[in-house]
Length: 378
Image (cartoon, rainbow, N blue to C red; front, side):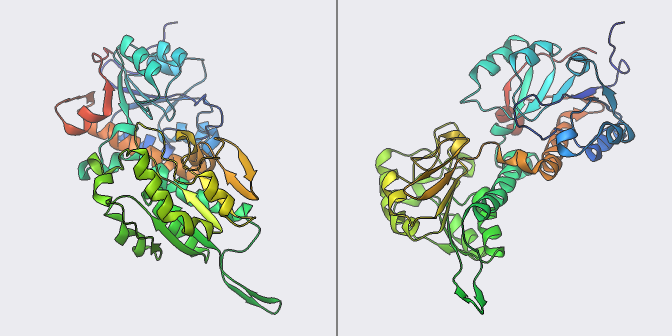
């Protein structure tokens, strides 16, 4: 029997199970499914898609979704595909021509995927390309996942370092607080600072953008003053922009002493579409005290530390260097809730009167839609 879309005039949102190794998040949680169903939209979930985020098939069914167990059936039925990770070539091949995809897609790393999506006539909305504007705040999945990563980075450091974070005055003696330095005070960095301070650490941070000094101080951290021209380092939309090696060398020199005196260093500095800047060189690691910890949240983009091994933990000069991958997936329940909210915001933005309404003159769609195909016919 041919698979049919639920109702000729009803737009179908499909959520397949993630196939990327270690990915536990799901694109829609039951609460968002219920909201979409209330709008008259049809939602079809692949069986088991929410398992890693503690969302079972029954919860989706109760929220109004259809649960599909046949391989590939979700792709073949859906007008809109909601995913977390970029689709594989085989997943793209299953999509209906003219479908609308919502997922993470890095235009600097997913060239082949984008070419395949273009070939199949898929319109791809990438969270990596959503502009940081007031109108797009509810769709900012990058910031949402950075919040998760910043929080988890501190927990990873606390679990690895062989000492307490807070000041402790005990009968056995007084233990000084851990000193935590965060490099890069974007969303992840600020969350890391706030979390480390809640655990009792003495915190400080630096960043190459002028606007963040007050934000750093607002979470109780010290600002590491940098004499490098900060204004030149802020790019379009509030993101950091790539600078030359001399600039980064000067930054390393300015923070060298602070890194050497830290018990924990958390690197979060990244530049969209480019390799993460190396802000902790081998000499800086060598100067750190034995037993110190570096958590490099930029590992997947090459790393802020010269000695980082992406996806692994290594010890160099007595310093443990963590290069975690896909940190947000390790807190899949809340990460999925946050991600689902941003997916829902996108769908409500592009669906009008039960149909896709893609106006590419709109600044958000113009920036975030990396490929553009003809609308699917139901």
